[in-house]
Length: 488
Image 1 (cartoon, one colour):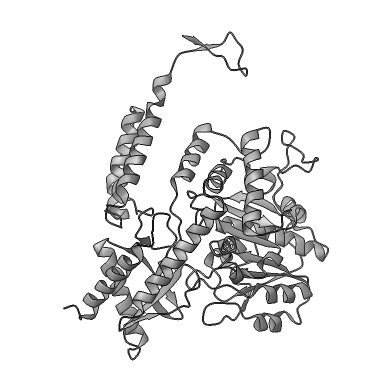
Image 2: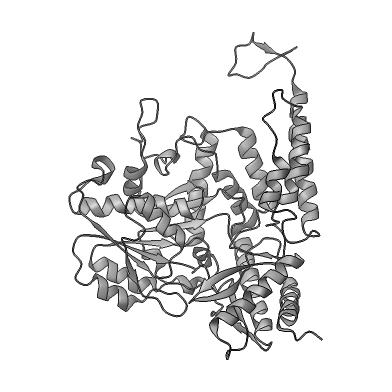
């Protein structure tokens, strides 16, 4: 038996030495490192399907427990069979970051420390780190230094959180307090959104009671940018509460809305301008790409993901709101044992829709500290350069068309001669995607764009390097040659 020395314990309390219990943590570390070392040399696709993995894990609930190291080993042995290698350098299926080691390590500490990051007294370290990381984020993204930053799970909840602040603010302008009085009998809110907005925006509107369909959809151009003149026409005669939702980085094309024009139009009607910037807002962190976001700093709120270009693990996003009071009114939770916020302190749980919450600010702090401004710039420049190089190689091949203007990290591709009808081009494109996935050499996505099925290449993984660009293009072109029947 050994005496505890913690000042939080009575000096006479003794507990058995249980240092052996931590062997499971060492086992997890070993398996994690082993997986990361092997992943780049493994096929770029899951070895087993969802149905197959159900079979792998199906068993009755055990009556008796098992040794924790044995359980961890079994989990890893079974689970690795159905992992989609999202940290693979050839993974371009969705707009997902690569969970860089520094962020993963900080995330492990987050779990190991077991902190509820709700408020200052529950975890002084977590609250302080969130505060510092908030300051760093606003500096890096060139957003108002006094804006409030809520650490959420991702851009979907980031949109929800920021739009909850917007909902309260615009209704209070017309004499209604939805945070206290609800929406029954409230004046209507009109939401204006671009026709090519991301689905997470519509989900957030549904969660908030504003409706997925009850929106005014504004026409967009060929790249998915909201038409400012179209917004002006629709909002010209509008009276009452209004929210305009813009986009930084269209999910297929990477295009950016004309924020300066949209802000001027929204301002004339006292409308709240929110920007869904899940990955595109990071363009502000690089001087070469910042011009794409001109005027975005004039918005009222923003949503952005850390688990995209900052390369944090998943469960990391940010809801940023210019008016802290609007965010706190929408999110504040009240109980006698919780802090009151009277000292104008930043209280984490007053900025997000959670009370019990993990300390997700730790990976953000770790990645910003590890990369610094120059490191973030390097990642953005590298990925955008790779995307441009892949597009340049592909478009030189007959029957291959780059559909979008490659302004950032997104490339969408159509296969088939222009003379072919749209269904046939879509069929050929899907065949190329399936060919690549069956080979497990490159993982790409598919999406519908302007009624045509296209291949989507999202270059944003931490492990993808410039030398991979020509290799990726070559693999895709080889697949196209097989599908088109022109392989020699």
